[in-house]
Length: 452
Image (cartoon, rainbow, N blue to C red; front, side, top):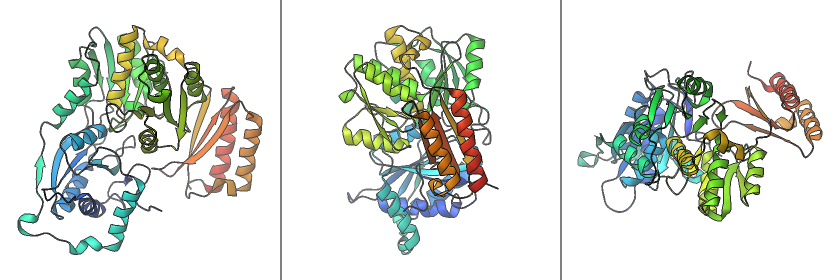
């Protein structure tokens, strides 16, 4: 069992264990040790970050740890998580490191790693790094003289990534005449994303592009789609696009301001790809959190869905194992594996815009391909991660709800991989009923293991 790494790297409140400079430096040393290969060359690790104020101290600690093991560092500064994966792969680096807590508030931060091929680390590598930290094995390994690593700043990293993104958009199409509201969440894409859409010809109305270190995800970005909804209506835009802090997820809204989530975007893109014979094995990979309406939409066009545990890394693992090229999460982590190795909010938005352009239809009409079943998600902060089915009152309530839903809905309860939260999700035909039932279960959970 891993103690340090969660479902998406190491994460916590900055300057409190494990998000301390001491741990960051040790993670840097462990990463340098693990990712050194045997080619007899100078080894290099890419480091990028989002716009959090704590990114500076964690970046410095990681650099110190990596260089102390005789590995060079390539610093790219603020850049979306998928951009760092792309730069790591294109520059033939040994690994990539992202300093970001994604959609979390600014006081949190995180560290996650990519291997040389641009994919997130499998559990066994993360466990190996944890064991290195526990065993202190690497403490005695200290290169000296000219074997100590150096740090270099890559000034054109953002430009490289912009070119890459534009090249994923069909060469015979552009965005001329489109008006786009774009909310970057004061995060890592605040420079890159507006440039991409503008250079493809769109009129861009930028929001959330003035980061100050503490306003990332604050009332903006993909967690607050109401912002782009209002702006789209105000500016009479064709689409609203909202990214999270590290821009690996995207939520959009149509020309009327109606939210279009990750499930709906996957339904639109998957059905279009099936029609063009581009969806490998006519199969989409999603998670257990995806709405049953997505299953129905794919079946109507001869497609099918494979579902994984929650977490885009598990979606990617299944895609690679089965040879599939489209997958994602309802939250907006969307993976177009023909183009990039991880969830990419800007890239996903470009693929959606390409469908709009290719079919010459507004987003509201395209979104009709999927009719979502009513779904309710209630989060409960907990003081411990107890198996809730061992709490008799909670278990009885869950079984009661399942009996009421029958075959016309479902209950899914899981702990967050990055926060002390229990997520209670109900799906059914009547939103008012399932809301009441979800709140009843949540109240029982709060009573027994809720945060005091």
